[in-house]
Image (cartoon, rainbow, N blue to C red; front, side, top):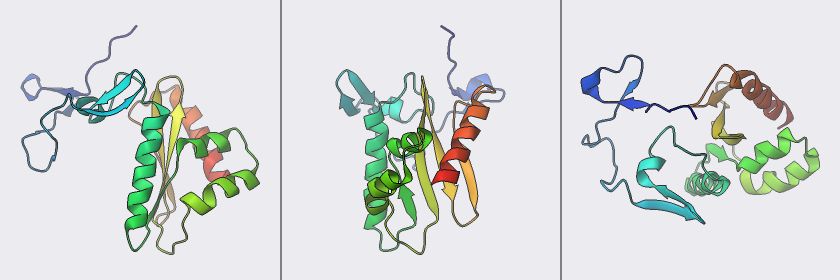
Length: 172
């Protein structure tokens, strides 16, 4: 198994091309000191704060973790008087990629996840890339742009990711 190098490096070593580690003492980072505190537990999977803050975890996050974050984000967005963002579950992308009939998708997602708004700015869709990572489709409505937010890009994964994003944007 290939060794993974840390995304962050120590400032004393230089780091050539890698992101310097954030200064956690800076008040901009509102992070509790206990990185071992468990934020989430699902059967044998535990998610400590330190792993949650990492851009490249050692394992693929469970679907329940990603979908819980999406649901909480959606509830938080709906609490604002002016709704500007839609957050979807990972099942939305999966159903579109498996070409589920559009009537089922409309029935399942429009009422609950697509609250009517005239001020929509962003749509977030998490997409699972088996076997070991997730990426995020971000639709910027105001700029009419689509972004793929993926920290684990490789030359082999780019065509598949672009094909998936085109299919989701075209069919949704």
